Image (cartoon, rainbow, N blue to C red; front, top):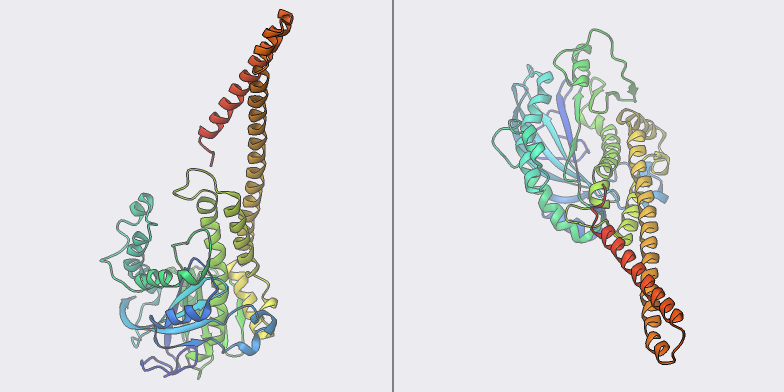
Length: 429
């Protein structure tokens, strides 16, 4: 049989007309960009079945100027399994896809079934419950399960099982030495559901229900943009996608479209990670009692700026008009531009905060200098008082000197007190 990337596998998956399949990619943050690709590749080999492959299926479509500084996407097979979803038994094949320049890993599930009576509209709800048996324990192990989240998800999943959460944690730990680290790791994943209708056998009402992830289709026709390529018809809301192929094709007809969907999804996910971690973990982390220092802030700004330059403007990456058309379609339905703008607003806020913090620290440094000057001047003048008494200068001069000393000491005490109050005052969030 054929895999979606065209390589052979030993598993048995329908690859004939009228077959039905579902692809579910789960995106995770590794914690930073990969800077030692060979070491990372060796670590990946410990988790995958068979060799690690380079995703060069689209190499002819990429700008070489972009690939000069961007390592190839790596992928590998993780294994197979079975799940009961939508009232039917599904076989699944798991694979791994790594985007080195984004520091994002994708755990992709390809579900197939031989059941002609599968209830697709129930697939999504069962999928969420099924994956949460792995996801919620993973969040607890990552320290991301807050009391509020625990209350919301108390009855959201069945008995725990390890689908891939343990693999992600172990891989993140093993690869950490080979990363240019971000200020924090975004623990949460993001997944999308892609229904593959081989031979376009689904009726319009079912397609609409799948796109809305709802059990009932609306009465009115959906205003969802449609993209048509040579072999595939694409319908997507961003959160759910239906790919329909021409009769007589197999699963490999979806390969290029799925590759572009996954790439755009990874870019969207990088923005999502920065939106959620920048304020708490960059400006003031969970164990920090003081705001971040200038060096940490500058490093965070650089990392955020570098990551955001990798999002959008597919012309920098691709030179294939057909693939660019597909990528731009997914950029639209994923609403990547708005997500990028939201992340860029965080960057501007971070820059303003960094600038304000620098000005505040300069003011404090100037105040400390004034305090030191007052202390030094007071000490010097106080040392003159015994000499003034000995040479029997007029009493007024001596009293004036003493008054100056007292004034300087009072100024020192006031400035010191103000500095201490500022230090002890709880910083505003």
